[in-house]
Length: 181
Image 1 (cartoon, one colour):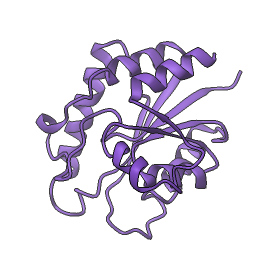
Image 2 (cartoon, rainbow, N blue to C red):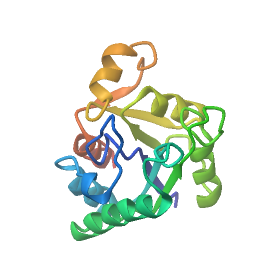
Image 3 (cartoon, rainbow, N blue to C red):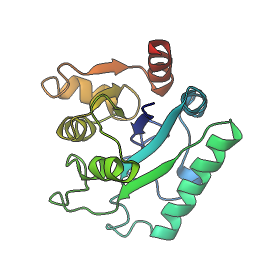
Image 4 (cartoon, rainbow, N blue to C red):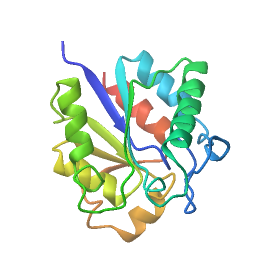
């Protein structure tokens, strides 16, 4: 049996985004319905993996210990609603040439390598053109949400968003994927 995998961006997909970065656990606020969506995906047999650029580390806005505390809060809140986040991958770099920094596909390819699975047909949910480009470069299935930077992305990046399914939020993605089963 094939493993069901879904890869999610963090900021703007699971939690509220901020142009000033999410710099502390207190600033990490789940988007309404996102934790329930994680729970439903987990219960539907999906392995939920997060892949997120976190350049605030390289920018000196927060350190790795703080990032780990933010992720600890995310894991805890997901578990409290009955969900499970299997893994979190992040790129702390600002260098666009870093193969792991989206829009480069390195983070997704590393997930594929570690989980020993192909990415073709794997939904990758994001709110930015970076997420779409990285998903396409990894030969995965890009999905876009209107939350976070999604609405602006749809408006300003029509060419990049061509042939990408768009959903109101992560809850709508979960509804769609679970109905496909």
